[in-house]
Image (cartoon, rainbow, N blue to C red):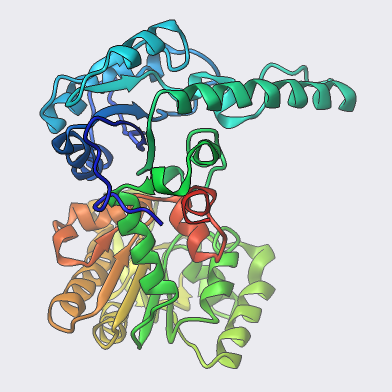
Length: 420
């Protein structure tokens, strides 16, 4: 497989699929430019070689052309971080894009308009009537597939080489994230530095594992993490179940959880997972105490109680000090660590302590114990950034859904398109 380091981009035009799906405030200012910054090393490598950049990305989930999701809003930030006056095309496969691509010189960069403005990017028909017949739906899909082929060929025609650096969209088999790769031979398609780093990090926690391997899985619902948990039960030595999922497991074991979040229809499933963990010799770690509140508010009255003795009218919003110590002890003894999901409602300052304790234990295991630590999933990344510990762990993933699907053991289309 071709790598970005071994390829000389001099005189070449590169179509780089980035993931600049960044949050904007009400005035269209970028509020978190992490995804842009992460792609900069790839883009600078191409420009320093003497190549030119054609940048493609999506922003949001538009259902057609929308000023709200126009990439013009992020243009100045991209230019600032890249150190180049990035040009902008108000379409991605229209006449303006074609003209600007043709005129692009070595060392120059062009940002195409939001790829998802075009129906062909996602490959899903829009505007079908709710009562459309199966025949009408099939006809729409067939017609769109024909247009999508033209869309892909047009994007591919812009460039000599295709670089995928959009891990956050790697789980989508969209035109620009996977299908376009077929238009380039093996020597002219490759991962950017960000994508390569993500792939390497996933392989370290899912394939080339140093043990003990500990996974910390948070989140509110067991149902949303079931496939991940089941896959991990065949790989990890320790599995820490935390966050809102705690209370489904606690209730399944006969505990009293007050008004805490719980999936009552998943109690049997929780017990099955406990049995699977036991059968696989996995140390499944659950909270022993909780920080409870009399209402869902940062200003609520709080107490610490045993996790299985939460009184009526109260709910668990974070782990307690005994659980913090329990989790930290397991984490500090680990050599591979995967963290996805906070221990509590970290958006409320009064319920961040547990997540901070986990983050600090991971940082300690990484720095002092030589562990490899991968933090991923939107809330975990927000936690590690909030606590200023992002540079104290081995890798912080830019992918939410993509990382979760990789942990589930699924093949990601964006990766398979390059690796074959």
